[in-house]
Image (cartoon, rainbow, N blue to C red; front, side):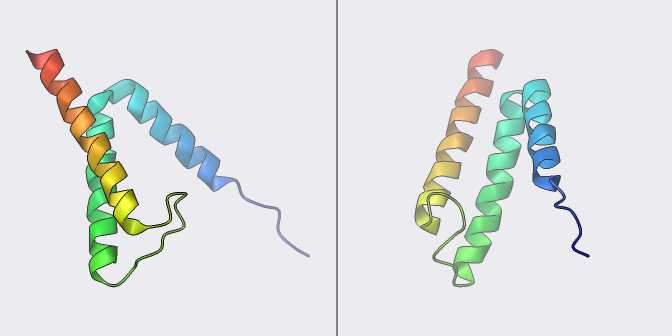
Length: 80
């Protein structure tokens, strides 16, 4: 008998959304940095196509870099 589908990703998405809500730009910066580091390592290992909607790992790196820069700008704006 086949096991029912476990919607684990939905729980993960909800947790990420909660952290984003609670921690604001700090969470965005952390997740962007973590994602960027992961994709950078994967690209250096030879990954050129991703399952991400953007497909090309260069586009994914640019996207994550922009999120990181936007988060830094938000943090600096709040501090100043």
